[in-house]
Image (cartoon, rainbow, N blue to C red; front, top):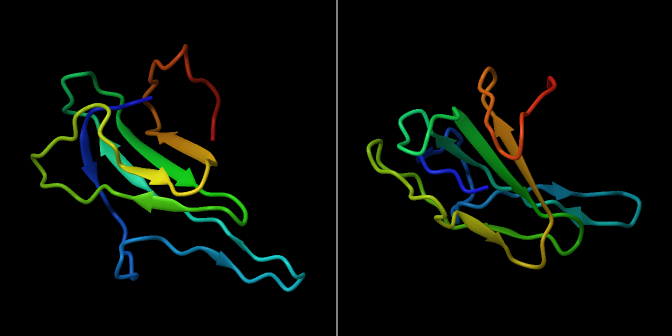
Length: 116
């Protein structure tokens, strides 16, 4: 679901390549790394409509996980056009989690209901 708007990061990444590192040093013989990314988009001033702030979190799962974030923070007045690539799974696919601002009811494929 492409969303046009301003992108921003509100996190600090210590790794010099700008990637998250989420290792799981399991003691049961299995090693899993669930790579993650995060991108937040402010649509409040978007010409395409205000659906609030949207967070998109790609999550690489299990041994073949890999998330490469290509997006970089933009200037406050710079917008990312709808459909702009922000990253990709480096091996296969996994999950995408989308979080929407509380109190805003985006129309995706119907009404979003429920509480978090």
